[in-house]
Every structure is written in structure tokens, then in C-alpha cells.
Amino acid sequence: MLQTLRRPFQRELSAGIDLAQWGGSIGLAIAIGIVYFVAARLSLALLTKPEGVAVFWPAAGVSAGALIALGDRARWPVIAGTVAATVIANLLGDRNLSGAILFGLCNAGEAVLSASLIGHFFGPDFRLNKLRNVAGLVAAAAAGTAVSGVGGAITFKLFQSTTAPIATIWQHWFASDGLGIITVAPLLIELAAAFRNRPSPSEFAEGVLTVAVLALVSAVAIFLRSELLANVGPVAVLFAPLLWLSARCQPVFAAAAAFIVSLSIVWTTTFGIGYFGNPGLSIGERVTAAQVSILLVAIGASVLAAAFAEIRDKRRSAEAALRASETQRYLIETERLAALGRLVAGVAHELNSPVGISLTVASTLAQRCKKFAGQIATGTVRRSALADFTDGCEDAASQLVANLQRAGELIQSFKQVAVDRSGAERRRFELRLATEQIVASVRPGLRKSRASLALDIPFDIALDSYPGAYGQVLTNLIFNAVTHGFADGADGHVLIKAHRLGMDQVELIFSDDGCGIPEDVQRHVFDPFFTTRRAGGNTGLGLYIVHNLVTEQLGGRITLDSEPGKGTTISMTLPLLAPGYAEPVGKAVRKI
Image (cartoon, rainbow, N blue to C red; front, top):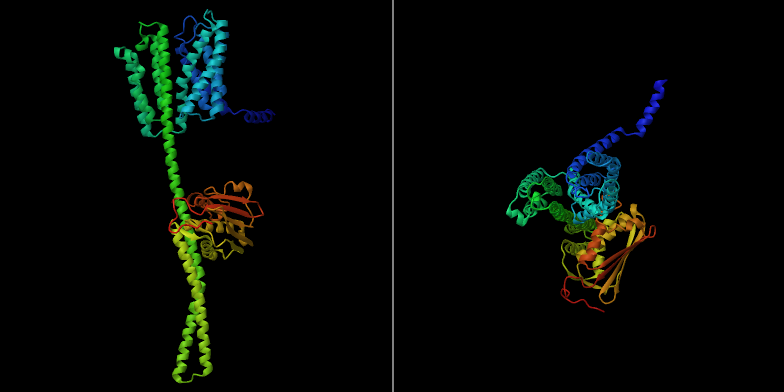
């Protein structure tokens, strides 16, 4: 009975509670709390007088950076760790429990507000690889610390014995927490980004070595006192290694370097060591110098890293676009040559009929001549046999002439079209004649289709343009209509019309009464590699090539109008004088 009752309870418990998720959240809260506590204890070692506000609060960057890097799923663990660490750190000092709890809530709210602003305006997977992202982080940090500073200042006035004005308390809170976020948060954000996109071993080694060198330089520049440093300042000495890191490595290394330098400045200012521990200066002057130096190092490193990261990203994008362009150019050329290959195969098939008939007639005529020669040799030639032989020769000659003329026309048409398509030669041509030649060359490839093809083009339209490009456009449109408009050999009609537009343009209309194109497909018909029949071996480059040739080489415009079940109409407006030359080649095109 006990086992029976236990099993449903266990199932309900396992369904409602993910122990692994809870374990991870608790572990994250503990980790955030420990790091936050260590940073807070260091910060509480140096307080402003008489306000009692920490001069530096890098712990703010721990909570905000962790929440930005890990996203909304880490919100409650970060809040719990931040509040717990703040309460413990304050209780170990001279703060009471109520004030410590309110400080913890202010610190947690600050992190949540800053991270929420970043998530709202920049989305997940935030990185400091763009200048606008750096500006966004600074703005979010300013907004978060400004709001939390109000609560912190009120808490100070209520629970701490201070006579300082509330505005002064808010100012110190804003400065210390803001510096903490822009110093520590970039490191955590970029560490998460580097974990997703790990640097190469060589880049990692170079970055670690440069960070180590910069740490050594910062130790010399900050921990020691010299007249040179008094004149130029330690930040100027650190510019060269920061610039190297930003230019050569991912932003995470620049963020790590800025964090190390800032930590060194905080440490030396707090304990009165080196450049920022100069006893000749008041504590207020030392604090101001340290805060300005941290601000310059943190923002300078982030800006440099983001600027160079943008340059690297644009270079990679340009290289990828170049590779894609080369691949696309290769595929387009392959498609063009494939179309020429289909043309060759079609013309060869078409030539087979007249040449085959001519061969049969010629062989039959040769046999009859041989037989007639034998009759002459035996002297048995009759008048009727001579008449039959003469009639047969005349009929054979007529058939030979007709079929050889047909073959010659096909060869001439193919020769002109093939020459046009194999190069980009510009010449003057009659639109009607060129269209007839192109249609004649593609008819063999349309044998399986029952669609008819008609022309309505005046004889007086001449173009100074690129007949090869025009031929490829027309061929692609014809085969596209047959393949997609009249699928499975359906009946239909294709009409190619043309008429003048003004003095220097011609409108060419290619229409069919096929199945039409759905509206959602029409938006993509001219996109490269878009096809609705990829399973049939189509590449999706036909209409893309058409669009490019019409708009670029022929210098015209192309539009498409279609409705499912009512066919498709493609309108092309072409100039009579193609772009590229000030004057037409050879004889000028007559304008009417």
C-alpha cells in the first residue's frame, strides 16, 4: 500500500521539478554569490568620506555581466546570489540587516534593469564586437546605475548616520557602480562569446601572451612612481599593448586586459601603493584620478576591440560574398553552356530528318542509275523506261533540294545563334529575324510539349544590342514556360509580341495561358536558386539569368504578372541602343 501511494507521488514530483535544472540554478547562484562577495569586500575597503559609499564597485559588473551573458534563464540565480552576497558583505562591515537587504535589492535591480535594456534593444547573444554595442552597454549601465542609485541614496539616508546630501550620495553610487559594470561586464560577456566561438590555438596563445605582457607593463606603470609616469600617466604607457590586442585578437582579450589594469588601479588606490597611492595627493584627488583612468582604459579597450572586430567581420563578409559571387558566376556560366548544349542536341536531332531523307533518296537514286545503266548496256531501253527514269531523277532532285535547303536553314540558324551565345558580341540585328532564328533553334527541344508558339513582331524593329544575351533570355523564357506553365505536356499557347515605345525603346511581351504562378512564389521568381521543381533537376537560375541579362547587359526593365489558372505575362522594356556605347556599332539604327 505504501509503495502504491509512493509511485504516483514520485511521478508527480519528477514531472513538476527538473532536479538537474534546479541543481544548475543553485550552483550558478552560489558561484555568483562568491564572486560578488569577494568583489564587494574589496570595494568596501575604500569608502568615501563622510558618505560611506564605496569608491569602486566592480561587483556590479559581476551581476550585470553574468545576466547579459547567460540571458533570462539566469535571472533568479543572479538575483539570489547578488542579494545574499550584498547582505553578507554589508553585515561583516558596519551595516545593519535592514539596510543590507535594501542594498542587495538595489544591486540586483540594477543588474536586471541593465540586462533587460540590452536584451530589449540588442537581443540575445550580445557581444561587444560593434561600436553601437559598446555604446549600448554604456547607456544601459548608466540607466541601471542611475535608477539603483536613487534607492541606494535613500537607503543610506535612512539607515546610515551620514550628513552628506542625498545628491552627493547618488553621484558616488552612480560613479562606482557604473565603472564596475563597464569594467567587469565586458569580460564576462566576451568570455561567454569566446566559449561559443572559440579562438584558434595560435590566436589564444598570442592573446594570452599579450595580456601577460600588458599585466607586466601595468605593474611597472602603476605600482612604481617615477617622474616620467607623473608627466605622461600610466594609461598612455598601456595604449600600445591594448592596441595590439584589439587589432590581433578577439575582444575577450582586450576585455581581460582592461579588467587587469582596472583591478591594479583599484588595488593601488585602496592600499596607497604606487602611482595612485601618492601621499602628496588627497584621497579625493587620488580617487578622481583612478576613476578617470579606469574609465579611459575600460571604454578605450572596448572601443578599440569593437572597431577592429567590425573591420574583421566586414572583411570576412566581403571574402564570403566574393566566394559566393565566384560560385554563382560559375553556376551561371555552367547554365549558359548547358543551354547551348541543349541547343546543339536539339538542332542535331532536327537535322537528322532532312539529312536522313536526303541520304535515302540519294541511295535510291544511285541504285536506279545503276539499273538504268545496265539497261543501256544490254540495249533494252524503252521509251517508257526512259520516261520513268527521268521522272524519278526529277523527283529525287526535288526531294534532295528541299531537304538540303531545310538542313541549310537549320545550320545557318544554329550557326548564328551559337555564335551569339558563345560570346558577348554587340551588333545590329532585326528583332523579328533574330526571334525567328531563336525559336527555330529551340523547337526540337519542345517536341514533347503540345504547346504552340506564335510570334507577333513587326519587321521594322532593329536593335543595336547583344543578340546572344537576347537569345538566352528568350530561350530561358520558352523552356521555363514549357516546364512550369505546361507541366506534363499540357496543351497551351505561347505568344511573343513586340511593339515600339516612343523613339528609342521596344516592349517585348512574352505570355502564356498555362497554369500561372501563385502570389507567394511571384516574389521570388527572379531570386537565384529558387525553383519549385528542384526534384526535376532544375537549378533555379533560369529567370535569375533572364533578370540579370535584361537589366544589366541589355539595359532594360522586366516585370512579371501572373494569376493561378490564367497564365503568365512577362514584359520587357528594352532600349533600341543598348548601353555601353555612345554611338551604335556600324550603321546607325533608324529612328522613326
